[in-house]
Image 1 (tube, helix red, strand yellow):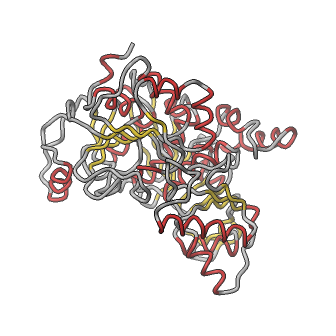
Image 2: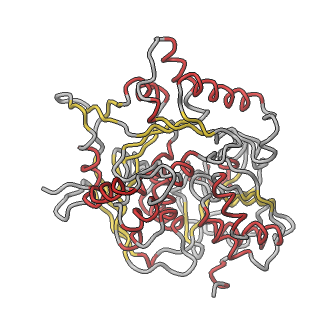
Image 3: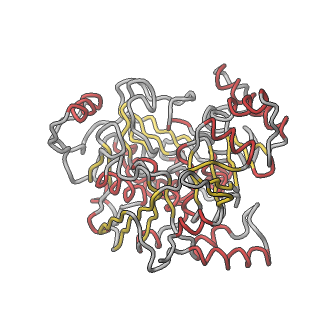
Length: 460
């Protein structure tokens, strides 16, 4: 029987198999940031265990970083302490750190791919659930807990049970105005937030094959929101071209040799998945969430379903929405374009293209936060900053920002935020904040109108 993409990468990294038990998996790259690493560093120090392979670890500051005045001392004491601790731990253990102000600083799942650190066929981990982003490169990438961070520090390996395999196929032609974010929100709304539990998901079909790498990263980023351990897309010419020439990507003959191997990673035709789903691209529309988990999503043309369930009712009460109602014309005072889901240059190009020649609604606080210093530079060089500023928008500095309430960028209680991030849990963007997940295009249209609109009617 043939092997899946996941099988090929996993099997190539198995160091040892414990009879009737887990396997020891070798980890190629370990990404760290300021939130989940301090306890792991402390554990190793307490036990007098050295870091096994510091050269295979890359650190950045992202979760606690302010997105204004990054040249000034960080005001919040907890954030400042965590950032200082990361700097000390990296210096002490000879680990590369792209801290605040460094030209390579940014959200961990944005800066690693754009620097060529992320490459096909790798195993990658980070103490962050959205590590699944890197699966867009045909990489086994997943989030780990603090004790596992310590395990990788100490051994560059993990003790793991091999997940089951799942494939999601989407074929056909997407409608105008439907972005990769809409595709994954649609899939999660159809399958539910527990559908991927115990599985590693491969995305296949012409819709994913035709996506840019930025789009594929958006899709894989949200695999975790349907319960999957991670998501993957087979590497192809789009992948190879994206990686080629990047700062830490292989060069010359080494690159050619790598590509020859990467081409072998496609799922074999006779491979069998434990579970498989098929969707028609024509059925997908711009999506919005109306509840308090990413599975509570609907098409812009739909109304909130009439479900009788206590948790469903609780979610609607929190969001102050009503069954059977459309979200169109809902007034919105906050818009956030950013996060490890949608803060790459393509996301800002899409937003700028829509915003050009228009004006931000006077009631809207719009936070546009690039995912890295490199993205911020591209925004300036491509003239997008000028478009945003002419329309009354203000760009902030790179960081996780309003994706989660761990920094200064919090949404006030009771306010709606149309957000390009990945989670809409209660309090995710601030205590009592009401998050509506959407694509950068939907977010841009909301910021211009000051309310949710079916922008597809105005597309050329």
